[in-house]
Length: 205
Image 1: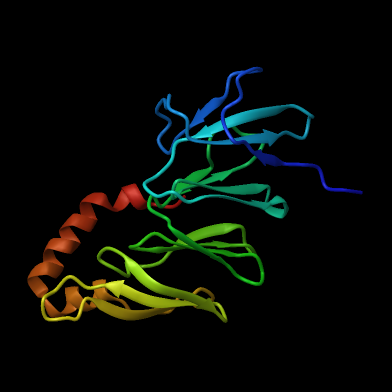
Image 2: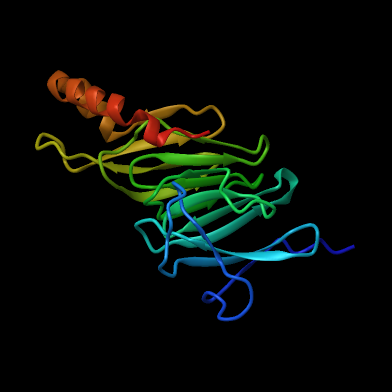
């Protein structure tokens, strides 16, 4: 028996039929056209979500029916949805511009500062420690390790620093953010104060 259709990516918001539902990371209204996706409920009805985009041009959908979750990347902003619910279970990132998929289906999303991993074994999502000050380049994913270079803003460095992150063990090696905060205690103190103020904004539920 063929699996029932759970979603459909739309080229634009429908002109006819029931009104679309704006979906945002904070529940606030959104009136522009974003990333339109139609969801099919188990009772045979459907509804159209208009996802408010983040700050990149990346739009993708990854479905995980075994966890009853659908991952929407709308302009770099990640939404964790279920077709039955018109509100996101949670959101993550805002500048996601590269995604890799592991052999077991897990998603590895890079947003220029952090790496977010949706674990297809558990159905949970987690975020790495901060890796870069602002940006990655030459990203690769092999043998469950994402690696590349993270941006280094200090004058004493060459601009980019190597890093690798094992998504199974969560071991992070290298990365420009850690190195700069270690070599400059004054900067580290400022960073810790700023992260303390903004910690709840990045929390993954």
